[in-house]
Length: 297
View 1 (cartoon, rainbow, N blue to C red):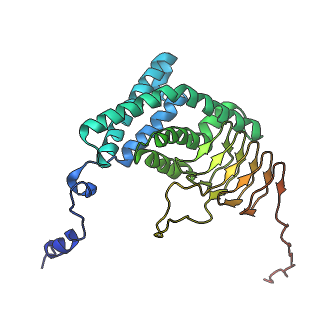
View 2: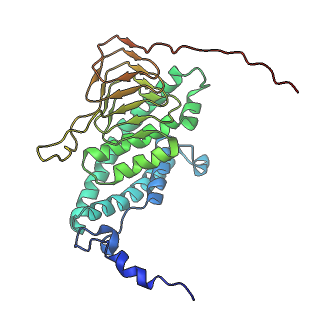
View 3: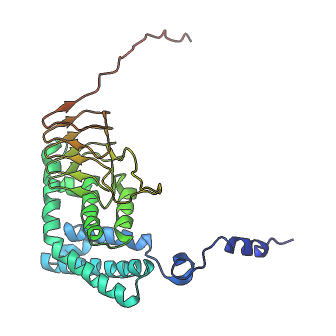
């Protein structure tokens, strides 16, 4: 007897919400696709750092920037429009809001690129393993993560739905660095190595800050209202001052402040404010070395 799915279809369909303007995944609206978000992240890297694309070899800087800018704007326009429609806006509202978002993006591009140049320079200045600035830009995952985050953050600030989070999740998948698009990051920021870094939504990071792999800037708890519902958007992540260094696997939780020029040692666990010019270390673990007898043949 050939197996068919007919008898299983109706029970499964009953699990769907068929309310109009709620059932976005059920044919009511198209949705932005991750594969198109991925194309945008690649296009942004070519736009911020021309010369990465083979087509750049036989053209001027102006031609390269124009081609890459047009490409990114075209792709962004489509996914932002879909995101607004998915969020319940009319087609007319979506088109108007998409235009506003694209104007905001293009207006802020010069400032974003200057920030990224400072991020790359901070990476080169702080890593003796880097041979030159080009190596940092082409090879270091932090530069890709920050390039995408800084764009996603600007879209997040003006209320573009869904796309900022999708951009950062593609970046997370590519680099192992997880930054919520709501996080505010100052200039000359760098993440060395990067794998396992988590930066939460309401984190604020000052200028000239350096993180190492495995650092978590997270929430200690989630504030709730009188009905027990989560207060979304409430400040619940750390504020990191200027000129702070946070070493590998340190965990900093809650709406606390790490003062300027502080150094947070590896694997520290912090839930309280730290005064400026502090050094926070945990005791070195006791090392036990035992000698083993060689196995006899």
